[in-house]
Image (cartoon, rainbow, N blue to C red; front, side, top):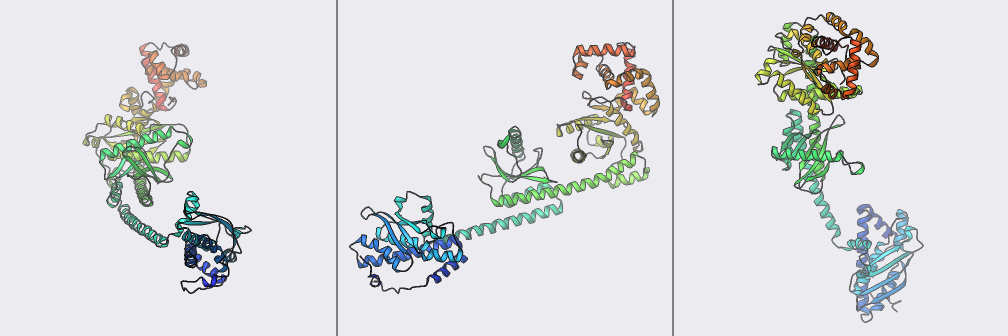
Length: 620
């Protein structure tokens, strides 16, 4: 055929250059070192393609009338050039239809041999210039794009290299071939460089924007301006609506969005969390990192948690129309969440310092360790108005036994919330903790200046505690009012005494409502109270101790509910028949008719004395 004639087929008068295979291997190594495996593969494929196209055009000039001979000359030329030994095995071609299926074997591929020398074995075929040569040569003679695919390679450990060449229509959209096809695009490297440049430009802009946000947030944290300025910084920089919410889904700050809209969005977030709590397993979704949430039509947000002391204390969100979370969103929201965490830390540190001073001041007053002039001096320093009269509130949280750590964390958060509540009402109080109860000393006159009444204020305060911490039940004891702050120890005793007689039906007790018991307590003659109580029900108490005072408690509830059997049964969650049986037993042990008004009153006073003295404890 055309064997033996290879040297005379250089009709284009191009100088033919022969290079050693080792030099070609060195070139390959340099390319891979500079461009990486992927880009060097594209370079070698295009290099081979151009060589194949050039050789095919030379053959077409020499013998244009016989296309099949020209086609078969390709493997011959490839072999003659010293690149590889080519053995065609199958050749199905239709030049009229532009269809080709060509298959064969490559032996002693210099490209593969040099690759093994330089890089060792490979997980994929490495004869890229050979594949490119075959693709370029055959595409030129067929007149349609033909792509070669190496299916076996000695670099992969195979005995020989195997190749298949087909027109694109015959590949039927093979994904591997479609991927290879992209490498033949002449402007691929420049396109990739342009794409890389664009990515770098975007990264630069994002970095610049993130840095600007960081700088502005840093200033707000340093100057301790609060959470709202943090939200303003985000909106002014990114022009995206921002919402910051507490763990209870209250809007702490918002920018670029109306207050009404922000509250509506927070309510939708609360509903979403409620739905998630009812789900189980993988269906349940939680927020521990920046994610995209679509809560309702028109309400899509990028949200991230605000952590403080390893716990989530709130959420920071962008209101968005996008369907994905970008890296800049993550970075900026992360910066904002960190700023909020630092703000919480500053706030907590300031509160703890103030509370330590205020708590210590209150403790000194209660234990009479400081004089009246020192009280006035300290009160001025901590901005507590010494305006008579004064009263005290004692708050008790009723709960199951918890660890010391949980108790400390709750009390810290609870007192912080109380402090913020008082600040919102423009009321100043001295907060402290004593014997497991939270105590607060108020100025009645300051309440009056804020258009608040003592009873109304205390009722709202208890409702706030119950609503804020709905998982617990609270009781509150309120003292009488005195004209001198030096009588604060008396107020403490009164508030605690009121607390002791509280129950699930009466969780807010005013000392002034205790009547005779209150007056007796004010005499400070606790011994006389104890003697009176034991005189009335002492023997009965001794009999009932073995039964955890269940009869004595039943008697108290019976008298508390006006000797009404049905009301008492409901209050104790008890059957009426069972209650009647107990009342009969009580009459027997007391040896007194408890249905007589005089007896009822005396026994009720005695029981209240026992409660105040701590001898009788009512169930929570």
